[in-house]
Length: 155
Image (cartoon, rainbow, N blue to C red; front, side, top):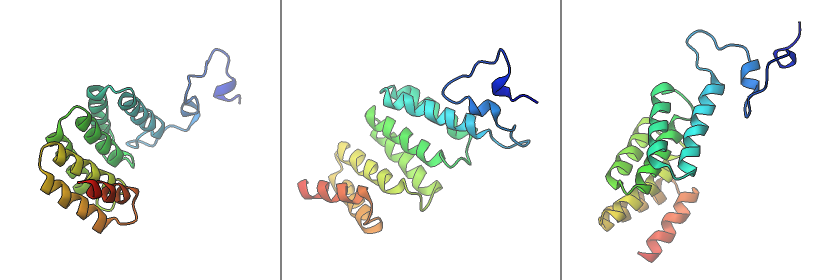
């Protein structure tokens, strides 16, 4: 039996032609190829500085794939997109949602750093300092803790 890749008339569709070759997902199971593609498209929106598009795409992603291993990252990028649009209150709320929904997640130190930056931009230097101190205390080995120490040193 010839493979789908060798069938005449079927052109590969970059960047993920393998997704069409994989076995179909079990009933009710998400297609991980589609899941990754949806995440990547949303991240591309962020990288292109299309923050409203990134927010909409990541929100659609977490609605479609709420149990995805990428859901925490999607919330993180929503918060960063909100920060980039100067929606500091929205960024704080989204990053807190990530922290609550995904305890112990590797994105938490970066989420705390984003919260601190948002608090600072809102003129609440005290809250920002407390968040940076919390970040350092709870995640001392993280790259975000290094940045938090740098920020505390100049404030």
